[in-house]
Length: 126
Image (cartoon, rainbow, N blue to C red; front, side, top):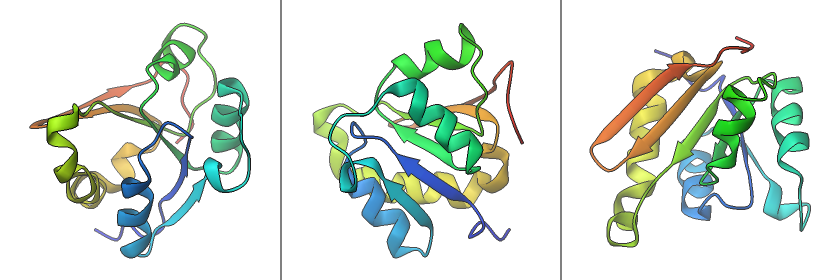
């Protein structure tokens, strides 16, 4: 499956190892930390939807924005990794993106060590 058409927006909470890992595979990853200091979660999810980017985050508030506030979303990957598992973060995110590809668009995906859960958001763009 060709997944290189996928584009990502990494918020400030996203470990930069994820940005580097995906960029090294040829993905278009816009990292918020490279162009702004403090961002608003609603603005980020809106920008990601407008630019058809999957949002990469470690901030659980995005779950609330997608499921309770029902903001338009082109997809969110919530990364839940404890400190003792961080060394596998980059390779695992690459594998998830390569394995699931375009299925990630419009979905809310939770990635934890040994587990990937994909839920369709109630108000998604795909």
